[in-house]
Length: 232
Image (cartoon, rainbow, N blue to C red; front, top):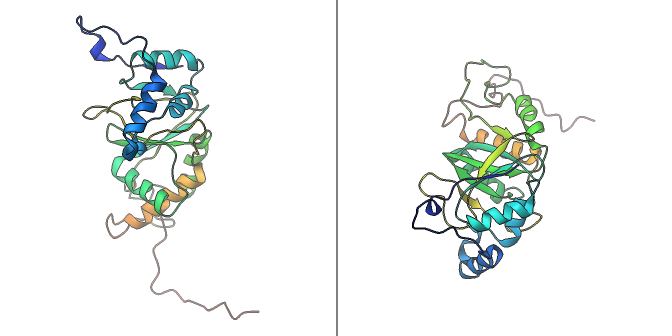
């Protein structure tokens, strides 16, 4: 399943469709001349990986050759799953992943949300891990009147599809664009455990000082503390 959005530049009567574009040569040329912006530039290998998510990669690449500056819709579940979070929270997750964790796979933004490409199966496993942490339900053992305090984490897996940014050019105002573009045929993708770690770290840093809520139990100032290090 793949669906490519219309490239409005080819809908004008005076504009001819862009047939015969050597897509891989175009991407290689752009990468050579924009080495300082590779994190946001799809490479030829990255385009091949994206096309591999569809049942007909050759057909997908052919359509992308015709409309290289158009966003597309790709299915999840085979090559990747996608975890969608609000843009600001996603930026903080990305900072954690790169500063303290293993990094990230491809990342895009679209309509105020950040799309983190994850390993297949993440969409099925991550929600249960978040539920175990009582994500969005208040502190464990505490009042549950804090629904929505933590941002919703949307998981897209088998049977779902997501809009991906165009291979070339920006997504326009509010359109999809790459934050970390795919640049290899076999990109490393975080699994549910890595993304859970990032969510928890960001959630912990944001609460309670900035949001007044936390997914962790509050410390009890009156609790007795015992030194168990000397026990034998």
